[in-house]
Image 1 (cartoon, rainbow, N blue to C red):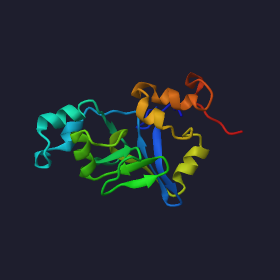
Image 2 (cartoon, rainbow, N blue to C red):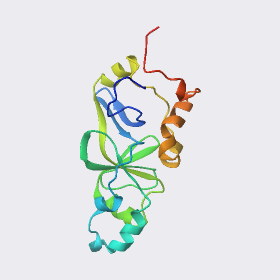
Image 3 (cartoon, helix red, strand yellow):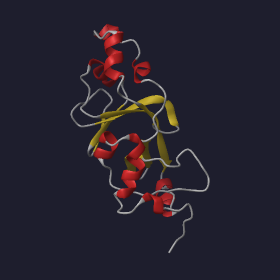
Length: 177
């Protein structure tokens, strides 16, 4: 939700990957960083991929700021077509945090759709529910089209449009009925 105080999450679209009685984990999907994807792959010549090939295969892909928790660690959100050493399955998507997925991406053999984030957003048990009750967040069903196919600049707008209204109608003031 818009607010008077600008903070880290203002205007963020977060894909909540895991939510249970222990808390929640999500990834901001609309805040690209300035870090080149290739810089995170590192030297993978030992896997038969030249540095030039790796740069070429990774150049079109953005690295996102996924959230303030473990913001020095990479997490790849991806489609169900590939599984890796550290892959975790959740409904329509998977999350992998091991280097083997980066090697596959640099070879051009990665998942059909993927997004690399640095860090994640996390909530303790009951915290996200409390924030939703306090009108901090709007919630919609996750859309893989918005996550993978929608231009970054349109993700916030398109996510809110799933609720059936124009985001420009939102106010930073909230109340309870």
